[in-house]
Length: 188
Image (cartoon, rainbow, N blue to C red; front, side, top):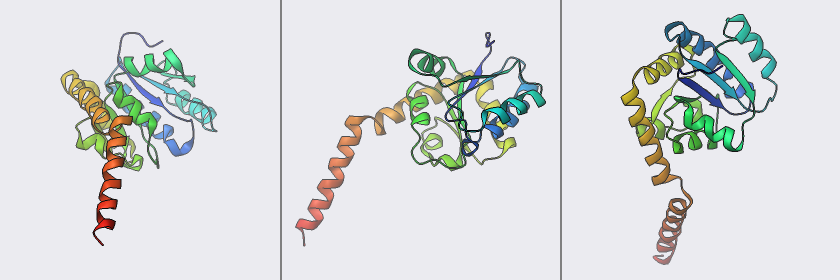
């Protein structure tokens, strides 16, 4: 079903708070302009799958949108490596492991402001947009249409994860905070 064209990957719980309905509507705009693009909406169903299937059918996108369920192991990392772009249009996130994994795999990311991951834009690893169908579609089209920029974003994402979100780096940052706290308390 995927063929040779680029695909956008959503990998999270299928729950309304993750915004998959926004993504499907945005992808309808993308599909109208990019006949080769596909969308993979992967994740365990937490109440949104049936409505997503109806939405996809109503938009005549059944041949362009794949809902494979949860992916794990080789299938998960294969999707992360093969995708052209990762998208999470969530209403609200704490710290998103899905975004972090996508960036670590070199995927440019299009995420909503509700993901609270401004580092994506700050590092040049993708786009952070309002939770709005038009803004999502515009960002996805921009990422899909520029191979060089997509490559640079992927590299920036990998660099971001290496510099801020690996266990050794987190340990260094934690130790620095403790040393700062201890230094302050010792000065009293």
